Amino acid sequence: MEQRRERPPWIRLLRITGSSWPYAVWWWPTGDACWACGVPALMEGRMRRPGLDMSRSPLLCGACGATRVWPVVFGGTSETPIEGSTWTPPDQAVAELRRLAFNRH
Image (tube, rainbow, N blue to C red; front, top):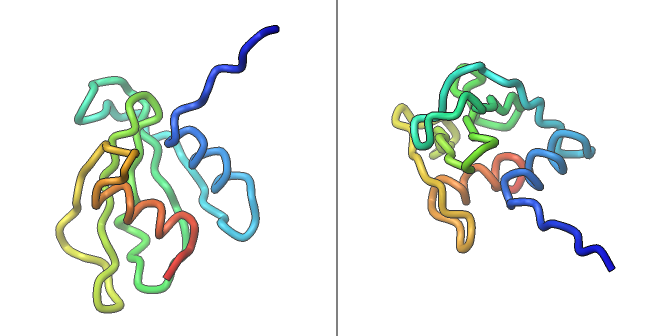
């Protein structure tokens, strides 16, 4: 019996939020290289969320799962991004990306 290969958690997040209502995240390839692994696989997550400045869309590397996100604090987008790449358990950046992508308050 053939065994299915498990997809990394960031690929599952891209697939679920990019194709399922009510999440409505439009993932666009930027063409830029990832700051963590150097592979040109960065995706920009465009979404409408309360307090999120559209010019500061989260970034996610499809190759390694590195994340850069501007957290929403006190009803507005932070000026300083946070970065991370630990998905299990999620670090602060991954947790904020999940919260925004899955539209959790």
